[in-house]
Length: 427
Image (cartoon, rainbow, N blue to C red; front, side, top):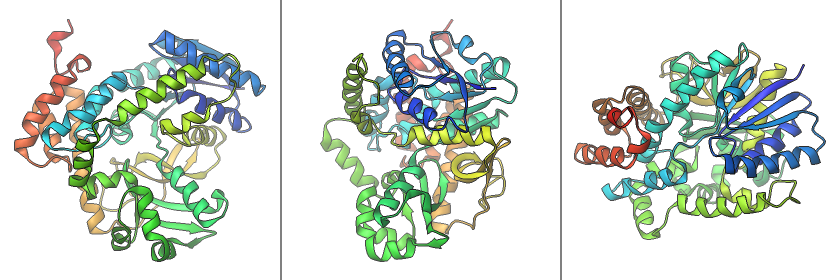
């Protein structure tokens, strides 16, 4: 018997990626019904139209159901994929500009921008999760691709929901390193360790042999350039940081660059999305356009479809996901959500045992995790004192003199999407 998948936020330009991934994994994931839900009927019509043409072109036998009715989408679903963006790209633009007024990095998933996004996203995701528990199939899975993934996943698991968070960072590293080594990606196994958007590759194993020491010795500058960091830092850490670590290791430089740029990533994404949606309207288009690669999220479809396929088929393969630590990474509580390799099967994600992080890595992880836990509590309660404590704990906020006015500015900018902080606005 086939499964039902509901995609929440299906008006996203990412959806054609996901659709292609589902077709590619049909052998392990027999989808009988794919429901595309979005609150924007116009975007849903455009994106859903391309999705239908892709599926028809591929000879997919299932049913595609676009809808603006959330309850209908969730009813009986076996998998609910969350890829929503509260406030759209305009809210993202505020996440990337308001922090800069206070000398902070402006970025949508880390720093104060990620904090602002979490405040408006966590309550809605938890609402959807509660509705999923009421309406979806028994033992349905929530798969979160909504940023900030680590914080959203922490909130979901803290509330006891069957949820796994996923990001394309590790799978992207796997592909790039395989290309660098001139081998097939399936031969590369990463020791990807940390928190979402705060991770390091501590090993790059090819057929069981760690090639990372060799890579750092011979190609540290090239690998560093790819993530925006100097090669000597990679050699110092004996690890390959994700590109998001640039915000932490080169904070002042990033702030200067953002000030000089005069534009934001949100502006660029808005332009790309407008072009993509225009392409999607072409009735002759029946595959994802190349432009989608510039949108970001490369390999998203593969990561999401692989995860669902392995859960469904009880495969037991290893994938990098966001899940409970459960003793895998020493020095963190069992209930802390981490981004690590895990065995994926019908019962969920079982993280693989890891050796402790070095002190210079673990110190940053501890601080970031404290910030994440405080942010979840602030988002759920609308408590401004907790929100201020969260900003103070954020490694990318300098001090109290910055955090206090920055919090007020972020709340004021996001007021339309923060009902728990402004209850009188929502009678």
